[in-house]
Amino acid sequence: MPRSVLLPGLLFLALTTSLMAGPVEIKWIQRSGTQTLRLPGHTQPDEAWIGTKELANSLNLRTYYNPSTRVLQIYFSRHQLKIESGNPWLVLESLTGGTPPVVIQCPGLLSPADGVYQIPLTVWTAILSRTIEGYVEQTGTSQLLIRERMFDLNSLLIEEKTNGTLVRIPLLKPLADFENRTDESGMNYLTLVDIQADVDAINKTQPTGLVRSVQARPLPNGSLQLMVKVNPQEVTGVDIEYNRKEAELLMSVRKRADSTRLEPMVQAVPVNNDPHLRERWALDVIVLDAGHGGKDPGAIGKKGTREKDVTLGVVKKLGARLKKEFPDIKVVYTRDDDFFVSLSRRGKIANEAKGKLFVSVHCNSNKKRSVDGVETYFLGLHKTDDAMEVASRENNVIFEEENYEEDYKNFTEENLILLSMAQSAFLEQSEKIAMKVTRNIASMAKRDNRGVKQAGFMVLWTPSMPSILVETGYLSNANEEKFLASKDGQQKIADAIFESIRQYKEDYEKSLGYSDARAQE
Image (cartoon, rainbow, N blue to C red):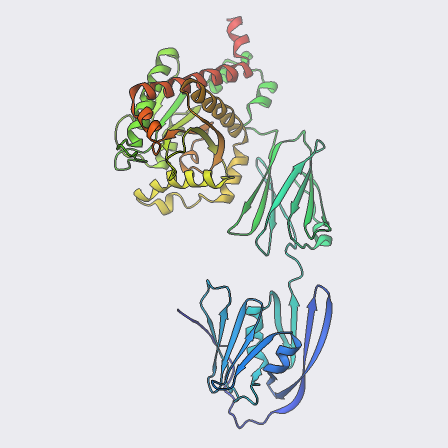
């Protein structure tokens, strides 16, 4: 196992150097109070030394000394320190694993007397800063300050964004669980399990943007409740997501008066009175995306059915039906044959065509062959492990692309949340059509309805329009593979998606006042 080496920068002290007795003072600030410990030690002009026994006893640390090997072990909460007679290198190991040992040089290490080693205060500072959860500083030649971590949450950060407000809640330890409840007044009661917070500091947080007030209070069970007030008339919703990697909660407050929302614009300037607006917002371009293709076959069924073939079949049948029923709508394909198209390029095709709706068609797969059914996704952070697994599988195609690291470097959990805020109107429309698609495929094609979900699909990252990804069924399931491989099955899926688009188009145009405008014409 590799070891990292730490050199505190001490000058080597010869064993013949004379040490003078003198106390060492440790100021230990804990949640329960502050202690000032005075330990017997030795000093010389530029350094103080403390015995291992004295320091371990003062900090309530367990020790074990093997007289035959002359090795002393000192146990901290998550580490153990090994000191060997005559060896100037101290080894600090993690008790939980996962990190390599740290090797710390201890110049002038004295041979033990009954298992007690004399160690310079500078070296103790290096050791304690890595073993105590908090802050450790040598404040003088013979003074040491230990400030135990007082809180798991010290402050909140509130940031105004173009399309809403983002509340950052940075934690100093992993969060066990959380729950949010919103009442009619717009008060969000966010409970963080087993979190100690600097309540006074949090309650001094200055509200800004859509956040009207912030208040924190500890609960009797050791949890924390954050009360974040917003004006329900100003927002479309509040989403809470936990970034495990950064141990940070992100609360996104979406603005109702968004320039990308359709409803306020319609109310301000009726579309039926302005032909230019009617043209701008007309559902006149639909982009159909057949998942995978070319060198990327996608999921493969037990009988050899390839996802890329099923999705192309469904998309072509859907496109043909749209052209027949709605000749005024332009149908754009991201691919119309068996060739590879990158995920980012698919979104760019949609934007360049000025699409008003993006529908990506896929087939699912699962290790459990009994799993079947249809589910539809729209962009957002995956809230379940199943959703994360599906998104990860579909996103893996990026590794087939050149320069994928550069192309997708901004695809992060935080940016997903910010994009969700920026496209709040599109997400609402996406959810509406996703619900129609799932319901219609389930009823018209006789499939199990697995619901509507959010997940971080990269193909939905780029399109600036309502966008959905349809998982039409499971190729890993023998019955669904047979259905999806058949022309009849593909036609039923296409017809169900078409019916969903027809219903969506009707609702969408009604909200824009199209029916009134046509009546006048």
